[in-house]
Image 1 (cartoon, rainbow, N blue to C red):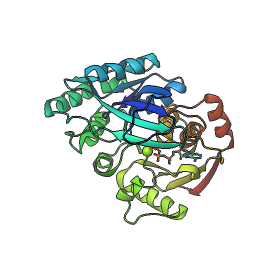
Image 2: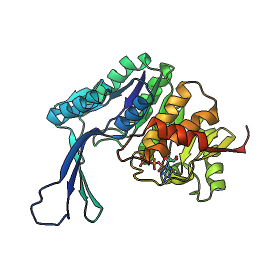
Image 3: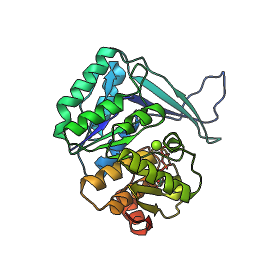
Image 4: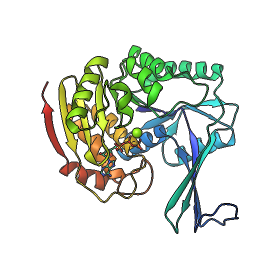
Length: 312
Ligand SMILES: Nc1ncnc2c1ncn2[C@@H]1O[C@H](COP(=O)(O)OP(=O)(O)OP(=O)(O)O)[C@@H](O)[C@H]1O
Ligand SMILES: [Mg+2]
């Protein structure tokens, strides 16, 4: 079982309208609501691999009930801490005529200190039931920037590998707690690198430096250019095949799901990274954040190219 920490849960509501205009009434063509958040996407990817992910984090109110129920309907188990305020709703308006997306993301209410403490205690209580834990996404208001660092330290005490995918201060503080693996993208890695990398050679060098400094595996995702992965001085570039990408939303989350899956299965380093790249690329082939088809995954996996940039 794998625990997917999703601290910033939301209802992800997509409203499809034919020609979106300001100041007028619209009658949508379609409305779809899903349980949203990067941890939910990681859980979806793991579920597609046939794993049993469990999502934790905070939910509250009727929106919280919806999120919990929606995940369970997808076959994903939940173990949330309940707040006494409503979970947020993130609304995307898709203009089907002009193919334009307008997004309205609520900040959500601040999580009070006693609920932060309850989450930490809950995590401490349950973490040793799991083979691995993923921690992904931004932190809701009120949550201290060292929240991921605290959870990673608790996971260490329980000997459970932690996989971190976050950004800015939460990533910077989280990586200092030495997670098993981090998955920054091109933008997120800048905060960890002495100089912002641009070329493949610079990304490879930065990944190795960060991996050595924090004693963590660094999987640096590069969109259609695949990923550079470093374990100490050992660096590989896994290049996915070029595909007709339909929607890359949630590719990073599917990649994290693939990485958790690959490393938890005990696959060798480069092969585990291949699982991540193939899941990320497979996600671009269908609409739906965190979704992919196993047939696409297998096709991509068979055609990725692994180049050893540097051996250990
Ligand atoms: N256009 C694309 N074509 C092929 N593969 C892609 C494409 N975009 C993403 N991928 C695959 O998905 C992986 C993760 O993508 P990316 O680097 O964009 O992550 P991210 O920025 O963290 O995404 P997210 O928006 O989910 O946080 C890539 O390493 C690659 O394997
Ligand atoms: Mg990402």
